[in-house]
Length: 200
Ligand SMILES: Cc1cc2nc3c(=O)[nH]c(=O)nc-3n(C[C@H](O)[C@H](O)[C@H](O)COP(=O)(O)O)c2cc1C
Image 1 (cartoon, helix red, strand yellow):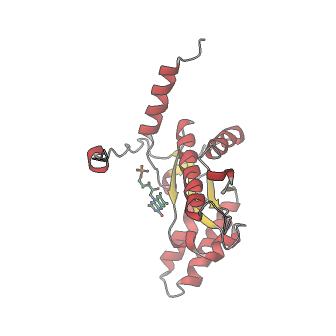
Image 2 (cartoon, protein in one colour):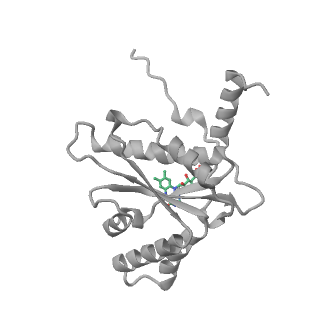
Image 3 (tube, helix red, strand yellow):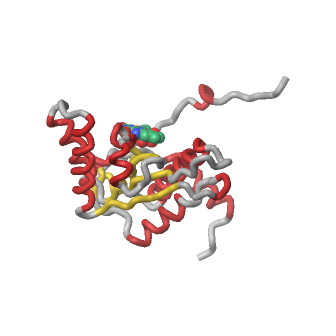
């Protein structure tokens, strides 16, 4: 079979970007990416732009029984922050990580005081999370980037093996949508977000 022409492969890459839609981790099931697919997804994530080649992004892979331990850790962190919260709140944080086959916590390992500002290091890790989602979508999986108060809790950051000065960009649940129909991608009104600067 002939390799696709550059035009054909460009069109399918654009379709891929336009068709991605987030699926809640609670609506994801097996199969998740296998080892080879996960390696591709992570390699794509590591192709994010990175000023100064600082490689700030970190990917903490959480699967199998570790997902339950993640849920316990998130529920415990929530309890420490909000001891009076209703039990349902703790259960919400405890239950979601065990649903998708795979959770990847994305961190930003920050070089404090570096000439490259921290905002750029955080943006680079965020771009990695986006590449990760797009790569998973290109391989037929779905996912969603979630944060919430746990992502900004220093105890959670430390428990995941990051330093307290680092940032947790968020959690990405990955798997296959359990709903027969996948959500349609949102189509924002382009005109509302685009302007042209002419300098005149
Ligand atoms: C940094 C970041 C954090 C997010 N955190 C949450 C979250 O905690 N809960 C949630 O429902 N959506 C969250 N979202 C939004 C979803 O990931 C998703 O973008 C949104 O549901 C829209 O779906 P779409 O990606 O198909 O347009 C977050 C997005 C970003 C970029």
